[in-house]
Length: 189
Ligand code: AR6
Image (cartoon, rainbow, N blue to C red):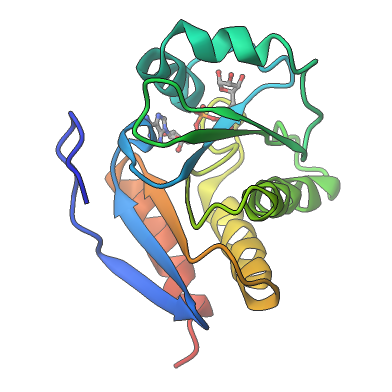
């Protein structure tokens, strides 16, 4: 794997799900060399901070120009663009729920992962990197979001072929550890 501008920890955990592989790494989503990276966007798709800011800044202004043509995106849905100056050839933009502790939020968060993987499948992409959607500005507690994210991805990979690698790219040590604990909890012994 190529190295990004930020120092990236080696892959510290993985799980084989039939032909597919699920990886966890602490690093910067914008530097990933997977076929697609997933953006934790807002419904305007016109940029923001966090993951969104890092991806737009690394991709260059052409990304925003293409996003302007998409007509936004609903919470729980996803849209795809080219990756422009990124290592990844595509960006899948998804809109996570803003956390208000309502029952529908887990369903919407799971839908972000499912719809992103469905788009990857339709475009015959083999590898996809995800950030921890909704757990920054949108306030979803990472301890609650991680098992929802993992179940959605594992559920998809169990039912579909095509996507062969899903990588969770967690920005900080604490988020990484929460995902690792959730992963250990779900992993069959
Ligand atoms: N690489 C990987 N993870 C990152 C990076 C990065 N470069 N930067 C932040 N994180 P957030 P959200 C982590 O706020 O909660 C934007 O303004 C971060 O620490 O990016 O879905 C959009 O335009 C956290 O764990 O996404 C929306 O308005 C996680 O990624 C809104 O924020 C998600 O944080 C979306 O909020």
